[in-house]
Length: 155
Image (tube, rainbow, N blue to C red; front, side):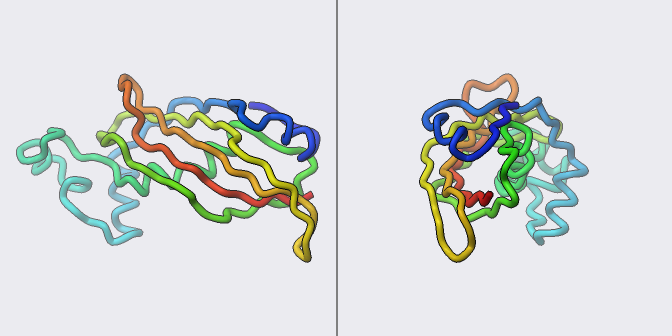
């Protein structure tokens, strides 16, 4: 994990990798709980026996949005700015779910700071960050997801 004293120090890292997380297992229990919360109960996620028989993946797969929902934790595990008082999710510029994540497989996040823009407005002084997050899938050359996230960070 990279730790920065302040946002000015972070700004010097534009274009650089900020870190890589540990591998995280995506269990069938997590997939089922996510399905319940979101109402996405499609059998390719929640019915292992049916998936084994009918799915081209021969197992259930995680929801793409379940994988994407790991982003805040993965970013928290790759970098920190000590002077930051708060951070706000501002949105997404780009998301692609590029490979299925079979139940009980592992993913990790690789974070790169793509853009940094200082802000000074009624909300405070800080920066707008654009961060590229690649969700790598263990034992796969193809990532599970690639996303470009936008955050506001305030000192």
